[in-house]
Image (tube, rainbow over the protein chains, first blue to last red):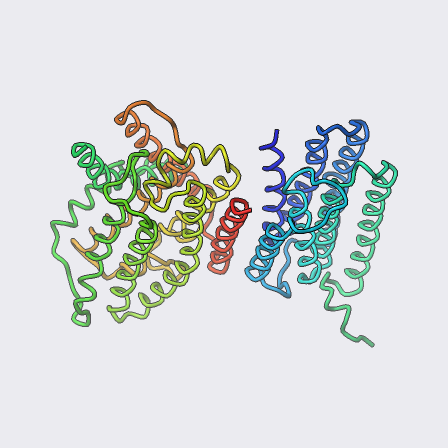
Length: 215
Length: 303
């Protein structure tokens, strides 16, 4: 049991690094979906220490449905409609962003011990995984040009927040978490519409086009 | 004891060409061809050793020394590698550094010989080989450091010896990550397909094969044999790391080891059949990724 939880956390971090390296949007969306599925699995794996099972089942099921099925489906639809397959020229290259991601992983694993937490740590990898995932999400949001990849970065960021939230499941009512998931879904919907607008206006999803003046 | 050491040397010297035979056979079968016989490389080596060598007038002794130094360095590295969990012929604390740098010395000699021909084509190959090697080397070192940290030993014999099984129980995720990194490094170091295509000749995308175009006769035999020996070294390292099967008796363990090494060749053949060569710009990305995996493994071990 403990080994499986370890592996799930490590796989989440490896998927972060993979996302920083991948230029194909399809593979990146699949990786985000797999990360979402792993998070719901983690929510279940961490239950065994005596929370109410029903609560965790709702959280895990909701996370799985929204993060691993619904949002990836929407993203695949988006890239199909807009006929884009890959991120061409990121602002920060793939090798530098991988190295930055690696630095983030190392720092979060090295220093997370010293952080004061409001509750006891359920698993030694929980906080560093959350920090590394949030860091990866931030990197993806600021260093990629295409709106689709930026949305993926936002999703990874949210995944990191979700991991951190697992720490607080004791205190959080189901309604709050359901609300967070719904917010996420709504945000992706809005971003989908925005992406569609950008695409129609500029015939590309390059967000740099937004900052150039036009008559 | 002496008998076992002799057997180990024999295994080290005789088995490697078979591995490349297995790899090529697997690739041929997957592609629907019959393929060369398994022992083809032995026959090639025999043929080449009986031929004379041709040397260009522009080359110096560096060119002639290249293949010999390369083969000698790789064979010396081989004596430090434990076979089937038994201690290696030579071992001392820190021998993994010497192991890695003997492999680097072999590459250095080959690259110098390539530059010595004065051909711009070979210079290009040498530049590529060295620049990719500079990224494969940290990855290899990090893998070895992870193993040293997990087993608490500084020699290859200790890392791959009896301490490995408890290390797997204590730190399986870290060792698994470094095993994946080691496989990537093995493919890159041996110029196998995702990095370099060993079958192409006279193509502007090739790396390792460019450097050996001017060698002929016994020199070429040394280079081909050295390449197969290097593949064998990485195979031995990898199978020992991932497939540490506890078998009673030394000879049974050696037998299992031979089967595992051939299994590694099958795996390499399948990877080569299933993948296309990566674009040159993607190769550093793959190697940096391998380094990152082993950095992550090291962080997991250190915390």
